[in-house]
Length: 397
Image 1 (cartoon, one colour):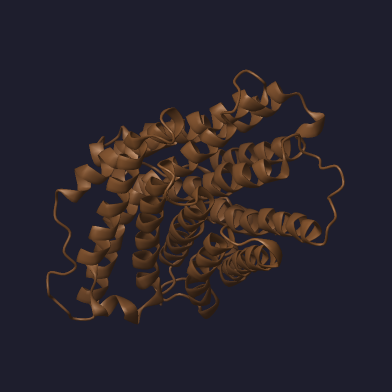
Image 2: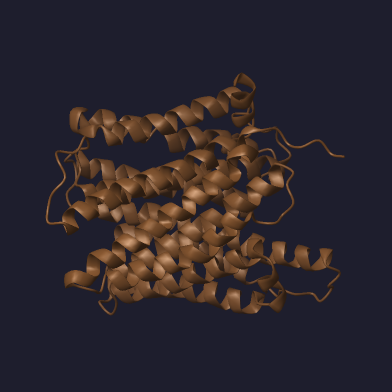
């Protein structure tokens, strides 16, 4: 058992991807129970957290689930980008503990002073940022340093939420959650724009196909970085304005255009590839719908959930799966359960978006079905990669 824990804490992706999968499953299960009780005409007993259940749900899926996935990726990718030494086991253990304390503090916030809850929950992102900053400065490249900006914007979104919960500002908690979600999406916009065509091209080369595809004009890189950085800023400071709509529409259209240029029939052969393309495209579509919501043309709830589940959730699942396979020495072939999850998550996104427009007896079954699919997808992820995350890389034969 000690060896298993040493392995789990030996690389950043192992413990944080496992916690992301487990927490994404557990947090959604609690939300499903809450909705099911409401659907039956009842109400949950007094909850252990101070905020409303829907705000706990939104906050924890962004700043709990999303933060764990972000940490697992950055602690794994940044050393590869810079040649810096990877984080040591003790750092990873402390970081995981800080993240977990944040979840416990928010989850038990009904009995804890709001300032203390904020201090505990807000500690994680700076702790992570300090480590990756030290690594990035070994070889500071703008296209990599920008991830520090996204971590900062993510933290600012969480700070605004806690300031609202502490009574220091009013009516800002939902803005903070949206800013945090769009900071994560900014990472997806930049990172997905880098890895999706590269992974597709590499797979084609391995298959002996040398075509120069997929195409990705160089102008898209700086354009995506600029728009990605603006997204959380307009969500926080200028919501429901024409400028916010313009930034979101531009970001979404750039993502959709890139997906179109990346398209090859080859990608549909491998689930580990097409899931990146589909998720990036859904993120772009979700952003376009979010733009419409800023000016009252589209339901914001529908747009948010298509973006959060199909785009952000899909890319998180895709990247965690790809990184786990690659960094544990497994072939880059998605296990059947994970491949099924890739196909199911867009269905959950569409169901949840449609559910927001329904009323009466159709609302709860549709929304509960979307949540149940999410739970199944992340249960399949945990089951499929449980052994890989706890055991050392296989010896090369």
